[in-house]
Image 1 (cartoon, rainbow, N blue to C red):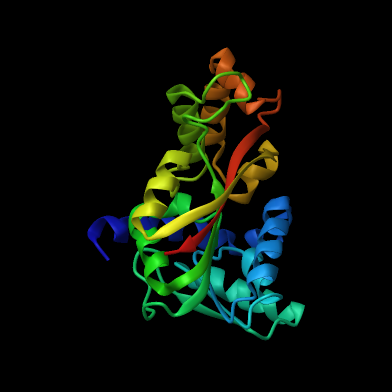
Image 2: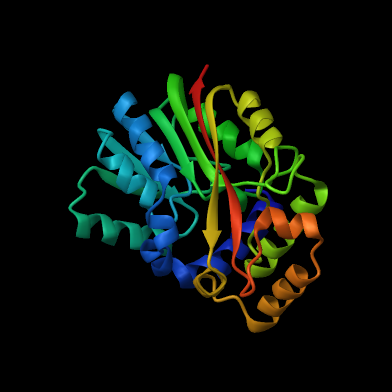
Length: 267
């Protein structure tokens, strides 16, 4: 990896290694209509071999295991993979294996998989385009790509009216970074489209959703220090009316997070 990727990997390890078990049990990560969409898409494809990039708590991989012949789940952190292995065993899942690797440099052959998925991972990648190129490289022509993540509302219709603005984007990235120093970026729709096209994918479906983030739970999951929590609340208190409206900021700091679900086919 490059020096930049090494530094990002170190930051991710500091942020997530102590919290690995929390991501296995996190209700926000363990459930959701995006997982239902993933299950439906995979039930239609029935891939023999599937890759889950940046598996985190493993919830996408557990869903995939019911519809794929074999699942390979990668993550940057050995601690996260150990938690996933233990949870898969607890659930009786026998067709799931793990592999420690960064998204931007997968030690896997070209066109090895019939489907490639990732969920709530790309916003930690050092380089979105590099990660998507790797996804495209290891996915066979005609294979499926399913990409689920938090997203910036920049340039798409906002719940506050009009299109999402740069101010909304800046606010989102700021509170994400304060909560978790390993945060890289919640990408906007245009960035996802450009990256996937460059990686050899053709988009077939795109779905926006909103996910309520309970502030105490959201910050506890990352053990966000009190000064950083106070800084987030200060940004929320000082946010403009359109920003407050778009994110539906609540008195306790809870808010609505935009998420994107993209289905694509490898060219």
